[in-house]
Length: 221
Image (cartoon, rainbow, N blue to C red; front, top):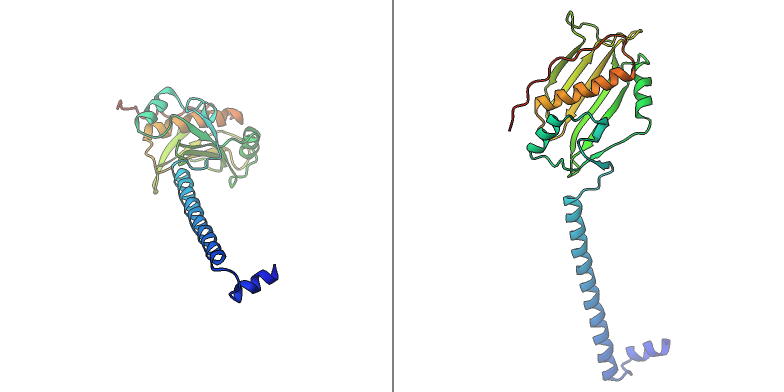
């Protein structure tokens, strides 16, 4: 083999063979170029596919079944009409969620919050996220056991304070609902937060009888 290489370098290999080797090398280079082009094309296709269909880690479900059934028919209808990709949504589920919620909300630690609902829409964008925590807030208006407030920010957000009446330095519950870039109307935000708040209050057995304020009326689209 060494002799063959040396002979070729010395010009002792016939021209026909040298030409044949050149053609083989040329075909090899062309094949490599085509292969690289093909890989680039495939890679671009995969990238486009990822952009159109992002990697979503949540479990596929419907609004009616998501987050323990807090989406009432009016909320589901309103979200579908808002042109949000909600025919199929993706929920982040935690098997220990209920136990963690009860432990956190009854611990008296107002710095710890528990996510009770985390949803992405069909494109993988955040749709809604809700969390609850114990709270030291006690300045509720007389005769009021729950109050909403809207928060200012880049995306719509809503808070809910519940006069739970638990013992200790954190007798109340604070709920927070945040949305993604998709518009979710105020009635939907407050209805979801009220339903989630009722579940949280029941989970920790609030001594007080909690009455939630009326949710704004849905305007038919």
